[in-house]
Length: 259
Ligand code: NDP
Image 1: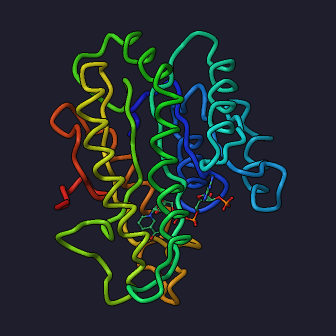
Image 2: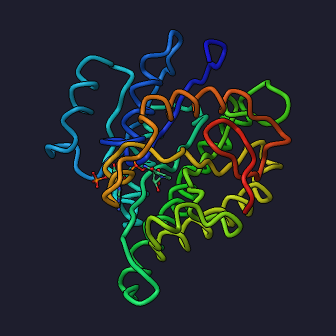
């Protein structure tokens, strides 16, 4: 982790849960990024208070408004980030924001499927499109060979619940729209890995574990892993990723998961 030097990172859904912890741990590194862009829907709201407190202590933290279901908001966020970067690229894009809706085969609806797909799949697609020029710039400006997260990478925070083989935690909840959305996010990751490999950009889907966040505890069970441990392991794992990991689906430890 100490040798993992990145110039800039952007995390979506960074006001709470895994996103907030990612921001905290990036800022707490002995060699923190020059820029940490933390996006959230409502930077002035009570839910962003912790992020605001962090920003008052860390001048390299920039809070950016971003509603991932709104293409105009995504484009505006990319403009803000580009202005801060002053000609350099964005090394690491972490598509973390996401939602879950409890549902069953009987109760799932058009609204539920649409909202969860728009948030968990279309959102990361559009965010990546908007930040692609900055990711390409980072890759072009790097003298590193091969692919890595310190050069240019798209990390899509997925879930083993979307693994068609494992159907993780089925006994806890069917969460149909969520499972389908994460299976689709995995396919998006694979497509991005094929489409952007020649641009020097690594793409990977990451299952963070079952983690103690609002989402992780939302099915009336307490998740087994703390957010601190999950994110520490994820950051360690990201340092190890290279060409061979492009287009894979891995867990927080780097173990390859079945699609
Ligand atoms: P939380 O519910 O704690 O946080 C979700 C974050 O996403 C919040 O910052 C939320 O912002 C943001 N978000 C939701 N919808 C939007 C939107 N439309 N536009 C912008 N931001 C939005 O979830 P976690 O931290 O647990 O989850 C983070 C990621 O990890 C998700 O992709 C999730 O699917 C994945 N994951 C989590 C697991 C767990 O056990 N916790 C397990 C497997 C995967 P706001 O405060 O405004 O709602």
